[in-house]
Length: 356
Ligand code: NAD
Ligand code: IPM
Ligand code: MN
Image (tube, rainbow, N blue to C red; front, side, top):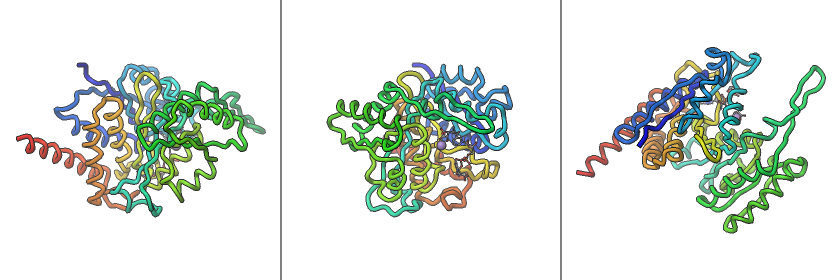
């Protein structure tokens, strides 16, 4: 068998801090279990600084030739006035790898319950399936002059259909419920989404399918998050609702994501940004990156056992109160990461003892 090839994009500000944490956990969990090689490449602001482009050609080629891409976070004030901002590199890699489906989980685990800012009566466990390569982020015309500016929200039936299928297939493995979130009381694109998704839903008779307006959804995510299973939505609504959803678990700094197309490598990244306000202090929460590594092991490398090793160790460390300041704790990025690695090793030793 061949060695797994992983393209690593640390990016900017806290990006390299949490990537380093994620890679240490990957190394620990892989020991004697999983062979991989890493190709680290400049991306975002680091791409601009090193190669004059947020998505350098060589970075894109590495990603295309990989089995999976791990990204930390890009962007920040240093490049806010650059002719081509770091964020353009992020949009470009998503489009060039055809990563049209972005999966962002929201689950309030037992261990996280005390950190959640909302009171929960029932378990909260839903995923947002966000369309990632079209909509207002990419539509033309897109222009600005001193007196007017235009963005265009545009969707085709095929763009809607392919991401809708991802959502229904996920729901089949979960609680059989898809909610399409839109603004169909105002937007033409939302009305096309309704037609196409209604049509797709007919192929999944076991799935309960409903729709909700995005403004009401923003409210329900706070007041009744237990009612959601799979939320399917367009690009910008998914961006906004996923930060809100992350925060009800306790911190934006814990939530990973997977972006995928139909073929080719998937990309794994925290949903948050480069957090310039806390960069360089060693206090960034590494859990979003570590959880992204677990998602990668589960979905790109078919190693649910190693993903569980990471997830269970993360839970144990949260439970023991070793958490960063965003969760109200006093631990550093390195302390949280070391504690997780220790737990992984303890689990390994326990297995070995049981085998004897
Ligand atoms: P942000 O997500 O970077 O930060 C929002 C808030 O959450 C900040 O207070 C930050 O300190 C906190 N936070 C985020 N991640 C954290 C972590 N791991 N641990 C502890 N606290 C954490 O959003 P922003 O400040 O609006 O954006 C900063 C830059 O990041 C911008 O340039 C933006 O475009 C970019 N961005 C990049 C990505 C990405 O790379 N995928 C995603 C979102 C934003
Ligand atoms: C995200 C980010 C990006 C997005 C930005 C940085 C372009 O907010 O990954 O959620 O809006 O998709
Ligand atoms: Mn976002």
